[in-house]
Image (cartoon, rainbow, N blue to C red; front, side, top):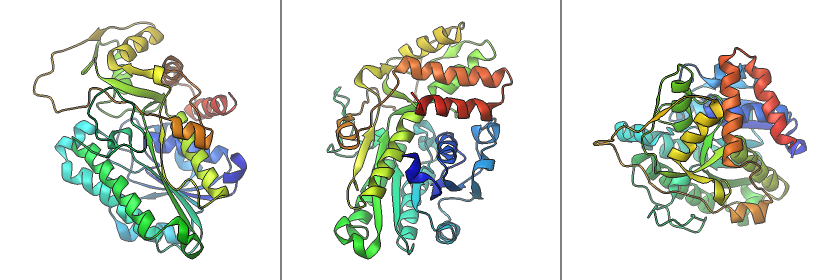
Length: 354
């Protein structure tokens, strides 16, 4: 796979975010030339700054809603690959800024796809959405790629709408049957609840745990019984790259949606993950304050990854405990003052060589 990306131009939206920073560093390790397009990091600290990721890419600070700047950036760079990660990614935040959430997640996707129509060279685009695009009836079933889209909250709905947009543009403008005319390949991906070093976002379990334990405060757990598909961030990122590499080698195949989640045994409750986190950290305590008048969040969610396993040959390498251990080792190194650029690159190598 490294050979596919070596010396290739990769346009990455959302490169200053948690997942985007990790992907920037992975692509750099594979020898790709990366242009990132994103707003400035919105947390303090931010992984992008901590690992000095600006050294690994050509960075454009811009809004995915600014179609003129987006178009100028894409058309001048002339990418071989596009990975679209830019998003408003938090369910609870989407209740506070629903219009912005739809503009960023749905219209931002439309803007990028429409710009792609004007790119006059072959390009593989992988559009990243979320496991929350599926209509979640909370029956306990793992959702597969044939299940209907839905979305109770604005975040989930905005991402489900993005999936419909992706399918429409693929059928209307990037149809594999007409590849010789447009030379574009479009796929979408849905990952689980990713964890990993460098995430300081609000209202996410592991950042909440780390913020509390690092200053020896109790960890407040919001929804201990909620079930989520936990996975280390490198798992889906390598899935996205595997998919893109397969498409590059066979441009009219794999132009579809794929789930990249953990193994079924690692679909675990928030409470169990929190207890595991305290155990791995070595000390700390959990508190479960009563939740009153809180916005709706799904109680049960999991992904069926059979398609990615059988069609792409991709599979998760880590169980939930190993993923959490790798994550907390990153944060401990950070708080000990280690060189996180080196540490992060070492974790990437550790994963790739495992």
